[in-house]
Length: 232
Image 1 (tube, rainbow, N blue to C red):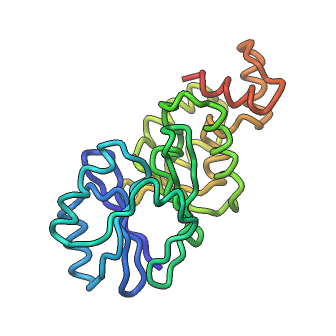
Image 2: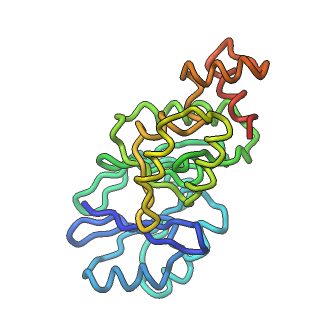
């Protein structure tokens, strides 16, 4: 299995996942680069999918399918098909509402493609208005092994770490996180996120102390998640 990341529109991130011959494109905004990659590697584009239907994630789909005819998997189908089979790769589709009602993530061996649900260092805006659903989606992602690699839909790392330093200035993990940051292939692990991402640190004693000092609710886990979401 191989995952190729493509940057477009300054901070958007697109992906091609493939084995030796079969590929799927996810949020394929970098059309020219994706077409070139598929052709140079002799890959058969089996399908195109989106993490959600916001236009900055769907903008390349029509052009990509015009240049390389394939199957677009609609949003409703993705949420009804628990597993996508791409060559030898099985990709689990996870419903992760919160950023939008139709948001989903893709789990493949050792990796999560998270769209605008979970970024490296931060999380997406809760445009759905359903903060409880967003909380449940975060718990679902956090249930995966700590070495799972997070591949997000945007590169907000530098902004996210600047904010993390404001929220938690004594967090010694932030410097190391930034040293590992590679703009050419943006990624982190769930362990990294638990260490630095303010929005995932709602159970960390240090974050609970910060919330308590600010007079924010800390009684339940959801109270703390909601309080952290309101910090920004």
